[in-house]
Length: 293
Ligand code: UTP
Image (cartoon, rainbow, N blue to C red; front, top):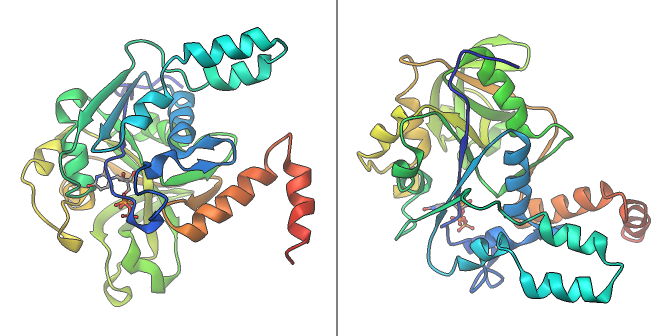
């Protein structure tokens, strides 16, 4: 779709968190390298971003996260071995699917994990003065049309800021950023306000923010204040809330099933769902599951 708004060319992937909920698995390995079916979380979101037309990929990394960059490297030894064995075209294809084209991966570091807002601010120079996307590798959405692609469609109509949202049980609002809902047009909601991790009795709605964002660069100015919010972390939600009123701000209730892969239960469920969805092993996964009923 053609649009009058600046295109979304860059995406930020914050991957500097500690992943404490997956200890000891994440003692030496990044949480974002945990696999859902046959590929790590980071590759799922990379593919989603590519489908949405993203051209530049910005990783905000930290200590012990080097494996994430290496995953997107050219692997000559592996390719040579597979080639010399012959008939391994499908495997070679899989290896190459995570090879980042030259000049497209940009790295910055967050020296300390002070919160998601701080991680995004660490990428400010690489983002520059243009609207950009953020994808949290913890959050996966299973749908033919990727969640970010759906959001870019909304952005092309509305401009401004677009976030992915979904309804959650009232007793769970304390775990999420929650939207104060304005006018609704189908699955698009005007965002009147945002509040991070409110108690159920203070929550303005049950519509929660999922880890996909299209934001205007002005948010970076607010993040630069380094204000601490919920959990004493520098929260992205607090700075996004300051854009409301000055710029269009919409939430999209996206199509597809969302999995919170940052929690152990969500991670296991995502592995079942992606396994069932897999052309090669889907039927066998389904049969396997009957054993556990
Ligand atoms: P989470 O809060 O889910 O990740 O952040 P975490 O802190 O690593 O996990 P737990 O709660 O300890 O288990 C969502 C995303 O934001 C990144 C994380 O790496 C993850 O991809 N993040 C979070 C940062 O890059 N920096 C931070 O300071 C916090």
